[in-house]
Image 1 (cartoon, rainbow, N blue to C red):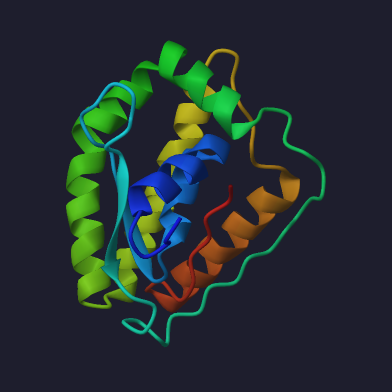
Image 2: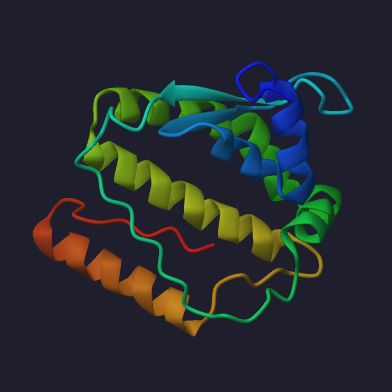
Length: 167
């Protein structure tokens, strides 16, 4: 398969492991477009900007536990879709507007808006996890401590200096 020609096939393969993995096909900032087909065949990643667009943005990934998650992403999302009314509200009401604001923040390299939107989205994602039956707990004590530390730091500075997205 020619990687340069068949991003649809690569996207489909990547989504089998984790839906959002399809975004890793490109570098930079990538939007995962839902598509309209019931089978998800037209759900595709779209590169918004390449990795050189915001070259002074630094991303650090901290692995706070080597333990396997109690609930896998795939089964967790399946349970969430079946049981969380908050997910439906989020998908229909919150996410469309938030995506537009996020695209604008990325385009303009507006770190303050980017950080606030990212943290708000992460917080709401975890609220949806808690709204699932049975509730899903992806964050651990260390994750909570890091979020608290980041919030305190940003508050003391008056504007976001860093942001955290526990997953």
